[in-house]
Amino acid sequence: MPSTPATRSTPVTPATSSPGSAPALSAARSPARSDHADAFRHAIRLARRRAGVRVVFGGQVEDGALGLTEFAGTHGDAMVGLRVAPGRGLGGYVLAHQRPYAVNDYVPAATITHDYDSPVVREGLRAIAAAPVSVQGGVRGVLYAAVKDAAPLGDRTTGVLMDAARRLAGEIAVRDEVERRVRRMETAAQAPPPPPSPGTDALRDLHAELRGIAHEIEDTALRDRLRHACDRFLRVGATGAPGAGTGGGDQSRGAPVPRLSPRELDVLSYVALGCTNAEAARRLCLEAETVKAYLRSATRKLGAHGRHQAVAAARRHGLLP
Image (cartoon, rainbow, N blue to C red):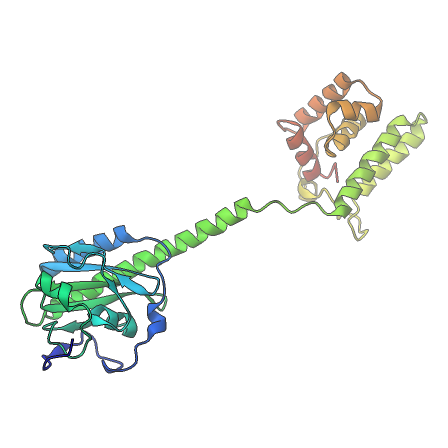
């Protein structure tokens, strides 16, 4: 509708641009990352109580527009669900310019457009102030304070409204950061573990095979020599440097290493490859119950609970690759 002669409009803060300048639409397009209706509701109730005005309302920015959803002190539903576009009306002006603004009498004000006069008139609102909820350079919502008299709201009321908007912005910023960290943790938890490198698998297969061969050698000296070579194999890293073992962990930090028998290490080496007790027994030419006994003994010495923990502990101590 065409504007009638202007009444005095009251910018709450010094303007950085004139009311007629081009709206900064990009600043108003930041959608709410999640629903903060409860935070807006609390901010509106607190602002109303502190400012001592009859009506306070507002809502979040979603899909580039402001949705009015939270109200305190209104007597009807004329403005419930109203969508305010950037640059349109008082709220749209605040969205576009990212700064508080106020009018002393809404309908005849010439510094805003009048797309929403009908619901405002039905509610009987005259003097209205609006403040943006600005988070990281984008407007995430707008808070309004209003009275039904055509008179300035005053510095105290506008100050309370701006403070409520700042506090709400801080709350949303904290929630955003928590949400970001939770998403990152959930993504990390859902990501499949990286597959072991072919080189690691090959080393473990070779180590188990060598220990199995050593078990079958009747020549005691040769068998001990081969087992000693297996132990040296563990202490040689990929570059061939002694002490850079593939099992690594506690041994390099000086922790005591459990003393496992050769047979216990033989069994663990095949368990580490995923073999069942029966498969390990077949490869080592032992009875399944014998393998089970060696595994139980090794698990106890390693302070582990179960075969998988025993393998992990043996690797930490540098006893397995």
